[in-house]
Image 1 (cartoon, rainbow, N blue to C red):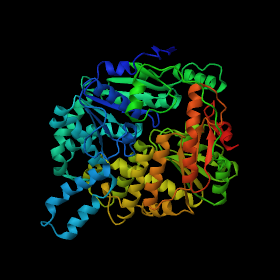
Image 2 (cartoon, rainbow, N blue to C red):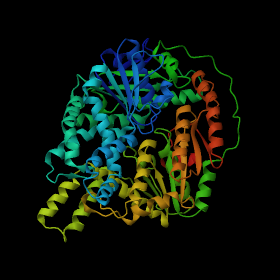
Image 3 (cartoon, rainbow, N blue to C red):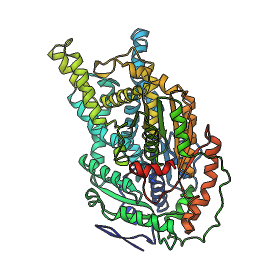
Image 4 (tube, rainbow, N blue to C red):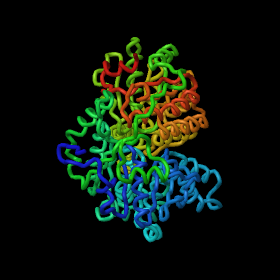
Length: 605
């Protein structure tokens, strides 16, 4: 089958998968894209293919909510490189931001123990408990993999399975940001300790930046589904990474449906994919190759599954026998909305793995609440999300907002400088302005904006579309850290605000905050939702309900591939039924993406 796009004609049933990517792989390969597009399975399949070809390969996850071990079938936690059974030459590693932060704090604090008074040491430890430390520690681990001689000697290729786009763009921009800040700062102090503690890493930052910008050493692999939002996000990543100097890029289109036959559901899906691929954004026209991976009956898990996905494309299996759902203990989304409305003003937060439909579910809930005449705010903490693209025509009583990292950081810097003009002279203001240029300021500014948005829920229904799991967990950990530091002065001399101090209490109040876990009826999203629920409960937050999105089981499809995927869904819907605190809502796959009030209302019927 040939797939024709505006700027390329591509053979979708190639005899070898990922031909373009595997033709001339560089030393470093970064796999990025919107959540749920198959970054981990694509990176894992590439790693297995390279190792099977006799190369020495290390695959690393930088996603705080990584499922790399599940895809590779590795049981042990891999905070140090471990071999992958059944694949000689392949090692894997999970970067653990929390463990890295603990090591970093000890590196900074240890020289002062026994030298400074205990209360001063305690103050330093408290100041290093914030999110900036977690970020810079994880970043240091990432840079070391690009520059350490022992890593470069041990492996021919290092593959990075990254977090969804927004988090990854932040990670890949940090080498330039920190290198620039350390070059120009004159205070000798940063929010993650003295400059001297970062000084040893400064050469590594510059070296890491050079490696990322060298197209003979580094390739950015943009992964997307044949869906408009995923392609647009890949295009945005291509543009922003090119602006950072990372221009050696390849594109993988994952999960493209083959011949639809005469099945109405398959025909609708095929038409939707063709429309999405008919006009690729200009920023994707410069990619070195485009590989197309077909939609499989089941997601490739384990080494055998990955090798099967790499081999010659098998013919579609015979149609499976349709099977009814084992459980009928579901609710409609409208019933969940009715419960949230009856409970009074508060917060509804949608959480889950990237690509499961959090934004769509959040927008539908907001539309349902607004339809009852209630005052509603719909917002997002995901830097890659655009809720106004989903809800293009909000009613007057529904306010749509977005926490834009660049905008809130600029506003935070301006607010802190304005508040300090009466107490600082010109030299002091110059030092303060320099401090506010620290890369850490963005983390603090985004957190404050999030806290202020949540505070609006005293008199309104605030529906929050969160970033994918890992980023959200770090944000919630920030709530705990800031709450514990109510007396601490943050970067730029700004005291922690009342909204930030009260945030953890508001989130932990089940009468005020309703957390909705959104998942697809597939193994990895359900496992991630289960792990997220456990993480939240350990933090004193209790999910209110689950939503299983985009199910094929009720669609009536008889297409062999889609029917196979539908048949496999029942097992995961059952997990949701047993895990949700109240009967979950189960939403069907829709031939047309639900946008606008009219489109979203379909999910409420």
